[in-house]
Amino acid sequence: MLKVENLQVNYGNVNALKGVSLHIEQGEVVTLIGSNGAGKSTLLKTISGLIRPKSGSITFQGEDITRLSPDVIVARGIAHVPEGRRIFTNMTVMENLKIGAYQRRDKDQLKADYEEVFSLFPILRDRAEQMAGTLSGGEQQMLALSRALLSKPKLLLLDEPSLGLAPVMVDTVFDVIDQVRKSGITILLVEQNAHLALESSKRAYVLETGEIKLSGDSQALMEDSRIVEAYLG
Ligand code: ATP
Image 1 (cartoon, rainbow, N blue to C red):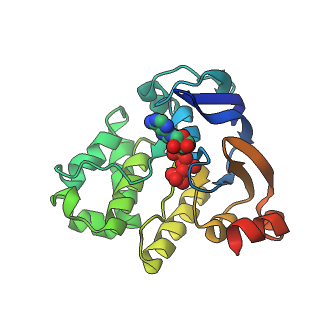
Image 2 (image 1 turned 90 degrees about the horizontal axis):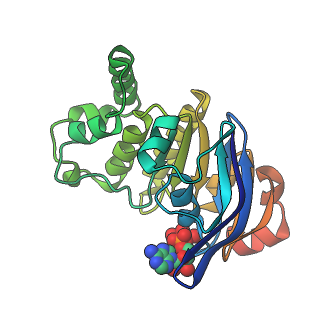
């Protein structure tokens, strides 16, 4: 479904990605782990068109999307929930959700999708007219995820969804990720919480200083001494 080949990204003279290749098959949850500054967010931003790579290619459903603009990439079916959530704090919950759906033309289906989001997260219905900035961190994460789901993605890019959340909220977010996967959406998950991320995914890649250092079955990686030492210890 997604194929990233030899992707190189520079910020000035910082080589953030040094030839990254990976692939994601339809229906998979694939995890990307790596320490701070490894290039995880840069990879997601490049896939969603926010950053132009120096070289390499990104193919989605058989088509080259490497240099398309972010709005075109969303329309193709890739939604990105950025680190730190990036909701519009001075707009209401409902206004934030509408932004997620702004390219949708299938108004009847959209109504059903709002209902689905509200059944996943009833709190968002209760708070629909409240300013998004007044939601708790966990509620803001739910809003960011819901906003992405309303673009009706085929592939969801999740950047650190558990960051800064209380443990009970982390469980809720991961339960939702599981439900989203069961609904048929493919997921690329970036997570600091390597244990949880490996448990929730089928395969994983380990990114270190801009290069893929290890990859494979998540279960097998959980037992790999290099992973245990660096990420699970
Ligand atoms: P974290 O887990 O800390 O969010 P990350 O793996 O997501 O880290 P990136 O944010 O992708 O890492 O950063 C990769 C490298 O690129 C880092 O060395 C970072 O300092 C650098 N970098 C990221 N954004 C910029 C930018 N806008 N300008 C210059 N350097 C940047």
